[in-house]
Length: 166
Image (tube, rainbow, N blue to C red; front, side, top):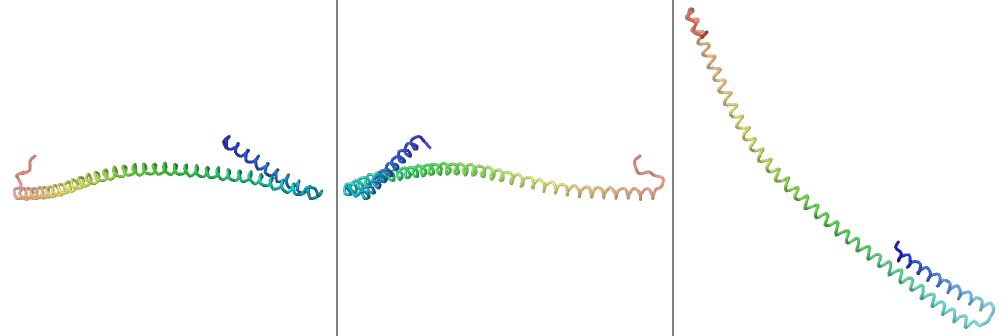
């Protein structure tokens, strides 16, 4: 609570106490006038004046309290609007940052996808080459086996000749 708020509350409290004092004084004077039976008309007139003064004091206090409360609500609304604008700006900045990150990742994914397709093509080529080489090896081994078989048969037909290199 600021010093000015304390001052306003103190002045309002003082005015309310003064208004209550005026009403109490008017009530006591009227009761005294009725009990003693003297000067009831001047006491009633004084009661009206004191009641009007206390009503004016209390009215001023109520008006001031409402004005201050309205100002407080307006200040709170202005702070809330400022906070909401700041949060909206933060949200926009976050969404922009997230969008940029998303774009970077989408580009990276496209690059990785292209690289994956390239590597899959190379793998397919390597598998084809492996199959071709395996077939050549099989044919070569088969030709070698046939050649050995032919040598063995030739050696059996000519027992003294060695056809194999030493």
